[in-house]
Image (cartoon, rainbow, N blue to C red):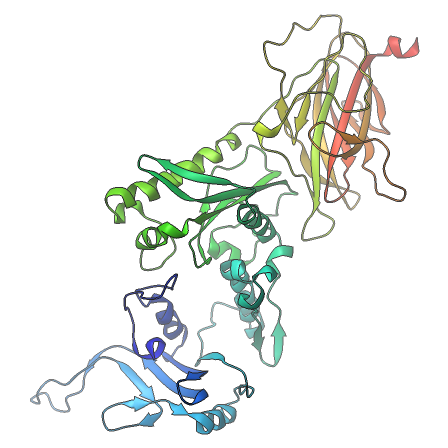
Length: 503
């Protein structure tokens, strides 16, 4: 009855929904005639499961007097269709409700089934080319707005959504297998499982919530290729956003953050507010429930919400600059590869900068006097203290920027750019293996296991196939590698004077 009769009442259910009635109003606005039908099966005390059916219209208020001289007769613009009583309209109940629903083409409930069916009469679909296009958009929208409660680990509390139009069923995308929603799902699971960080306000001291981020290298999305539901959600391309949510675990907003320094780099974060502050964050939401506005609050509550955005910004500060790693005659980069939505697109995952440690790749023999450096995902890791000067007669190979993702003959590849300096000519040799962590690599892959493949080099003289090439010095080169999906790929490049190789 609350859903049908009441609009804009105070939330009185723990972790309940909105308070302004905007959600219900959307249903009426979607209808060209401002009318919906509500068909429900619910538990009735002393009766058991009972079906109900009622029609509701919400239009403009009007004056119902028949003559200008009559007394005013104001009407609210709300209309009802059902079982007419003396002063109000009741819903049809029981078998009568089921029979009428069936005659209207609605699917009746099974004997032991409960639930609610909402029917929007004459929906306004003029924005779409066809009913099928509108149905696909609705399916996408369900995934983008409700994915946290669609995950299988919720068990019996999981929302299983389905869209049907014109007798055709349109599947709702699996958020855990749809780019870029899968990145938000991964971040959500990290914070849920304790692998994220707890954001805190220091004065007054208060846990604000849990935060985690999923970082990947991606093949940049083509312009205007994102589905309309993603655009409406505020993520029109590769993500650099944080999904904000409260205790009900519904999407409040995809909060846009700093764009990564590389177009091939993307990240998706999730901030889940602490249950103890659910009322605080709810009070910070405007009627549309799509933002947290600190200025709507006062005192400690205002501080908590304001500091939340500050802490999120601090966690993502390292995306503002493009890191460059410089080493002597050997350069190592750890690049993670993960499958994406399209199958042929491979992304590279990387560690947080404070998790990277210095050291050379395991199993790599270091030439005399050579230094090493390791970069995870293009982010440099340096040894403590001031680096020793590099002798001028030594070859030096330096990572110039973060790796990028591109396509080569139908395959997704990682491209890393290096600068070569020192006495030349220089022979470069690249090795790629599956990385096992920050300081280890898989030199001997299991029998039958896929291995990263070095395709070749792009130099000023043109492309060179294979893992070895000779270049002049100074020069810039690009290494092209095919990574193994869902692994970290450890790349080591060794530069040696060509005359030393010959000897």
